[in-house]
Image 1 (cartoon, rainbow, N blue to C red):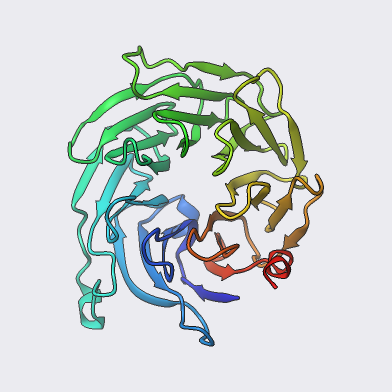
Image 2 (cartoon, rainbow, N blue to C red; image 1 turned 135 degrees about the vertical axis):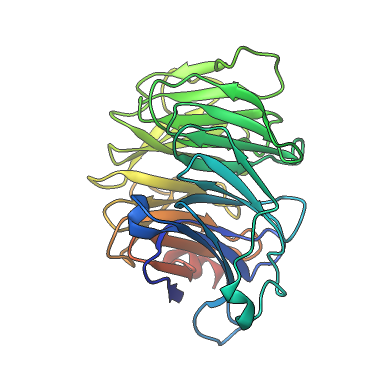
Length: 334
């Protein structure tokens, strides 16, 4: 396991670069996101045999940073979501980011977009059909669609009645995206339609409580997964959304984030408020195949490396970020 700490900065989101498999970004906040600023860290994995993650550089923002997403078509650009209701697009995220002496002068974002009235907790960059588009989900109860070349949003979606924690584009169906909220609903949307800002479909009471996370299968275009404060992960089939097709129990506390594997169609990981990161192969069992307790606080961020099979990163409020291959998945590689 490769790890590093970010003192006084509490981890909210982590993401591997789709272009440089040894680079990852970590979005953090001071004071657990309740007050203070935020820092975006650019980290580098060591060469084979090396130890620890290296900080290549950092960017400061005046409010907490709650999510990060790499640009899918440029290897040194990413976007962040902030507690002040704004989105930032950052450039120069590569090996030449900063020198040690430059750390005193913080980089400024290429673009800052601000329309949300409350914290933005989720940001997602479009897939190959709409890679110039960004999706933001906020605690103001709205989702906004953005063109990254424009300062103003191009659509506002108002289909939830409470805080929205996550909105994600489908990687396999053009223009389709899903969102989840503390209102308990799972909504589906089509960003290409001339619409009134209302969802295509709304699954009410998708969980027995708040819904905090969702992600799409990287292999099956019909499969969508959600995670809630009830400690459950539920799988949904777009061909029949009247009821979930199965569920996974992730403990007594909330599932804060989940990530479907880019390597195997039946593997999913969850980041949980019981300080654990859990791994499932739902084709083999509905019980977790591995429970990792690598944190001493809420685990909030989670991402798979698309370039290195089964490599996972997680981060939490304990100011620790880890990169590792889960033991049970390492056995599959041997």
